Length: 267
Image (cartoon, helix red, strand yellow):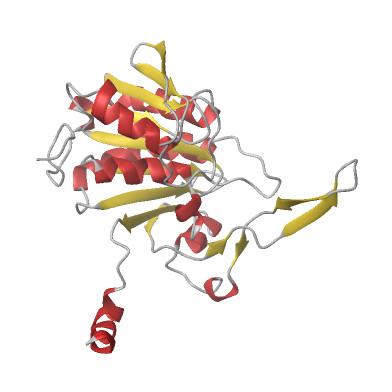
């Protein structure tokens, strides 16, 4: 039996009767979390928030082990944690909501997309990842920025509630999270089931010098891998054509195609 409030894999889930946990990586006061909290409130009367006190972008699936964590009550069913998104979900399910853990977890809405390899760095996705490990299904929501690096959250505002209801009504496999990316404008191309694409962060590294002449480095923006630009079924392509990208992400990273050859090599 999972630690979550329902056994994973029992679908459909009626969100109007569900206990929903919200978290993110942009911090408790982030506008994307405020948006998610407002929309979740239209889906259920039992919405909880446990989010990092400060921004934890690119924290990945990191867990705080070398110092104590503090929980601060921020209102009715709302708490902040001085830790990572993973810490937040772990404490929410095992401590704050232990009497009745969540039926489903929503993470986000992230300021900026989480496409391709972003999922390995993203605290937004990590919160959903931790939820699934603990037995509660989860959806990570992210809002792509426009060409000027700005967002008005319009696509998430317009599409999140309906998409969440459709996904919960249909369900998805155990040990899988759903990674949703909204395009910069309301989704004229609808929603698309996509695979994870390629979008590497960190290739553009800028070097400058501080007032004492010592060099420092700034990791730059993501780029799309050239091999992925022609793909039509991946997350990056879907968002670029104005669709909501909906990607199932498995917790099991095993390359099953490689196992037989590896077994022969080790025999």
